[in-house]
Length: 114
Picture 1 (cartoon, rainbow, N blue to C red):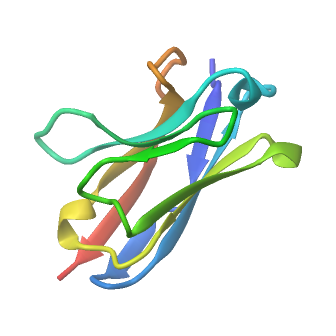
Picture 2: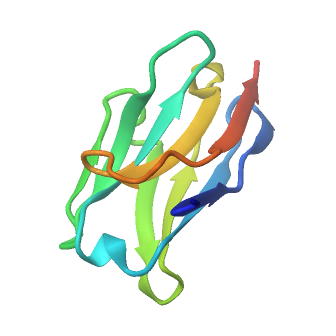
């Protein structure tokens, strides 16, 4: 059962930008903190950034200053603006609650070429 749907990934050069979107079931992000996670090949899934219902953000050091999380309440959507992308950002990106409570979606692939 799909609870979140991620989109917006793609192939981009280092230094480029992408905007990811996550459509959540219902209005969950008005109740729970939401986050983006990512998983690079051969690595564990890691937390990247979170956004609380009150608007508090928290970023992993690796993306601080480059990524911006936001939400669109009308569309039940969480967004991730990714700027100054680096090859090490290459991963499948997922959205979920904090801590994760939804079944993991397919994620969206972000590939950053050097």
